[in-house]
Length: 248
Image (tube, rainbow, N blue to C red; front, top):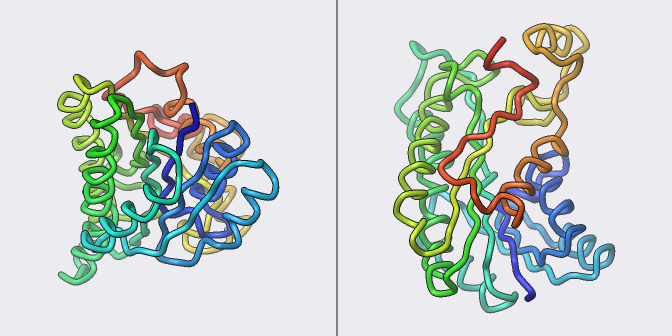
């Protein structure tokens, strides 16, 4: 059966979303891209390379009417929506005592409310089909209270993603839908505040049990596994893909 995976935040050239969209396409998934930036070049690459269908829509995940319209468009353009990877997010390195109300709400709205808005709309379609796989990107910041790059509102939002994941696993399980999260450690993407200096890279690796930083493909692999039929008995789980940061 031809199925579609929706990937949010896939347009960034060095991001986890793009790596995930390409990996899923290589596995035969049709791809729906939802991003605040244009995703047309990525859809062209996916269609040309992997011979699957792909369609991109622009929407701000923190704007629920935009999200609903975007998912409606993806659903009309592609085969049934069977998987969702919630990857869109923003970083926030602002210290707590310097935090403004605007920055708090910006981070919560994109990193937590946005996950809810997209998931709620996609879940409606999944329930009708009696099948679905949902994976959202949290962070080891949620478990450690920061300690990576971003600080309080980011950690709070990513902890909320874990709580949302567990609650949805309970509510959506009877409809044949699994819901899981992936918690990355430090990943070499622009969300870390731009390209890493050798010194900063070495300092980050020093806090890990592995000898290198994570790459977007490392997280894409974890997401793809949790969206696959191989993970059918896993739900409500947060998979740490963090180079051992959390236990270190």
